[in-house]
Length: 68
Image (cartoon, rainbow, N blue to C red):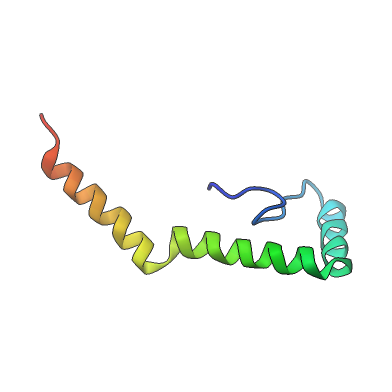
């Protein structure tokens, strides 16, 4: 996926760990805002239509230049 725990995603192994991470974020508004902004940027860079189109375009052009 390419996301990084604590930078642009929260990953937890249990419900309790996830709840604790959410509580930590609610108590740290600056960290919450930063994580949200980084997560939004990550999603837009990987999964927006322009980003997907660029990846598709690269794949299509690479097919035309591959040597068989």
